[in-house]
Amino acid sequence: MTDRPFDEPRLAINRVYTRQGDGGETALAGGQRVPKDGLRIGAYGTVDELNSLVGVARATIAEMAPDAPRVAALDEILLRVQHELFNLGSILATLPEDVHPKQARVTDADVAQLEREMDAMGADLARLRSFVLPGGCRLNAELHVCRTVCRRAERELVALARQESIPAETVRYLNRLSDALFVWSRWASHVAQAPEVLWEPNQSSSGKSGI
Image 1: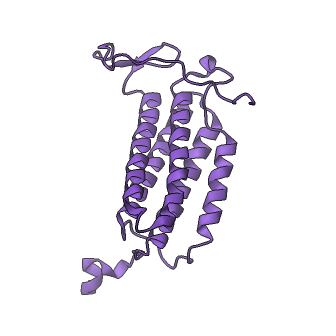
Image 2 (image 1 turned 60 degrees about the vertical axis):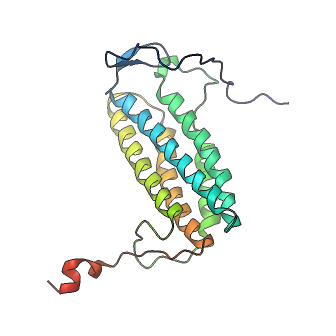
């Protein structure tokens, strides 16, 4: 067996609470104590939020799969994305001087894989004639929630990068993932034979009244 590029985890969690964060600080991977409302903590906290929401989408896929078996292909992709998001959180929780050569991280190979998957699933979809609204089916809406949280995580990383050093591929990964989540939301509706909800400006109250 070839060596894996990243070290396997070496930890044992015996107790969840430590009381060490009661004063509003937390520890980075290198042991530094930092405020919980710092930019770095906010960034990887949002990545954690995104990971949880991807898990919600996977639970919906499990419920849909008996009636829409093709959607199961997306579950395998999203599970991999969850691992990648955890790798991203690992590198964000570590100051550059403390990063180990074999520490988990996202790489440009992960970015390229997202692009390949977008191209493959996008080939099944009709060209858009308008912007789309979240909805049509539950999974579509959940993937749009993931997309918007992913965009927020990206914005927070950009803000962090103005203050501290972060790997450039972390921003690239989130940028591409948000695009992928958009494509996957459309693909989910396609394979579930759910209607796609298009934006129609004149469906607003003022548009209908002609005001």
